[in-house]
Image (cartoon, rainbow, N blue to C red; front, side):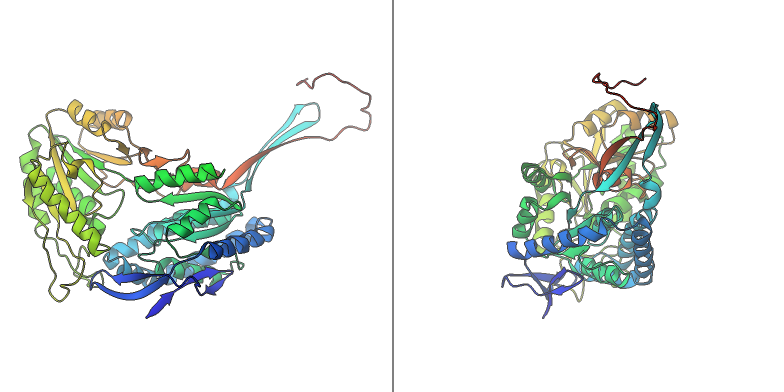
Length: 497
């Protein structure tokens, strides 16, 4: 059985802990690989390697850094099908969805390729007699990324391209469930000419995470995952004097007003709720139907949901693949049963779904729940699976109160033809990312991604301008070159004259 090891100093490094984690093919349910889990000493070795590499990489020219990133982008484009196949094999998402993941990650690589314009700094001349003031940004040193299973290529690329473009070195701890895609990215970075030690991977579990959070030579930590872990990451990182951005979970609402095109809204609800089997933090998990739209909208969503083609990710006919693990599939299915017990109407029940020839795969059909009480677990919890809840609201005011009452504030959307209503919504809703007739408002690479409330811990969002600010620290330099005619002693406090 193939063992996936660490990547340290520009080459594979075998694990020494003797501890391994299984890596499954979710479509078959079979274990196909094993992952070597790092010890604290192995994490220390990766950090030490990154720290040594920072001495030269942090002083390297912007031209050298961007040359590597341009080459990496070229290689990634050439190998995108291969990376997408690795994602499908270990995560389960269909190939077209995996290709989209790679493409969205490439947006951040492209942003990093233009880092020279983002790090220009500022200069004010003659602020006082022959005194100039300059503001510059410099790298932090060794930074770390801890990434989730649902986007094993894209989310790491939300982090490391900007981090290394800014002059930092990087240690990645990817999800132990689907580690091969990020490992392939490491190989492509090396092929692109990235110096050894600038990018490293430690495979692992909580042992590796805690050591990265405690290590005195790690200056900053980026994290994407669930809200409980995001809270833990923030508290532990801050305890050890680290900069931290930790993105948590979500319960994203899609508000549908009576004037909306209901066919279009139903199509988009299907795409946003069931794409990637619902395993994405920007998935729409609640549709809020306002006024008398509910019955017709639910009928249209139900009709479409029943016709979705579910199968293995490498089958071109599949529109949705399996979930990541058997345990997660069973947990998601339990929400459908509990919702019925707690007062919801089960319109489409996807539990117990199997795919012929893949009976041991971690498949789950799509479920649609209507008239879901806000007290039901299916409404309150982040399910992270193909379960869509519909909640009814009499008025826009009732709907906005419902959405803003959520403890999460990641993403939200409104579907309407009324520009005034849309503008009011985008100003009043309490969420970090808002879509107007766009169900999954994930920003493009040069705008930052991040939510509010329990969806974000830390002050800065990820990638975009916030990402550049996160991976650099500001420095202000005040300079005076005295004229040879100047002289004398003056003990007074300097003033701007």
